[in-house]
Image (spheres, rainbow, N blue to C red):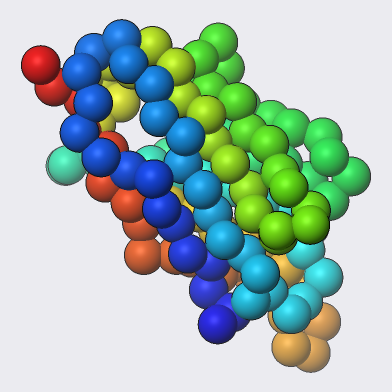
Length: 120
């Protein structure tokens, strides 16, 4: 399928770690970047990390010291390592592929998300 598929979410205690995975193996288009976003209840979705086709990475200021995005090209999988989890990290985490789609149109494909809950 063209949409990426997220996995790895769960319930974690504060201070714990998680590694989320984004399976982008169904992508058939040229990829500009793959990103991880999150949406907490009642809040807008925010982009927290992205990795470009050349391997360069970007992070939002709120997470750059605790989140690490990486990729496994052989598996077409993008990972998001989250350390020192805080209750405010609780959200649904989404992966998106930003691609050159049909007709040369640039667009995003989104996964369904994976829930991360940080609570003691």
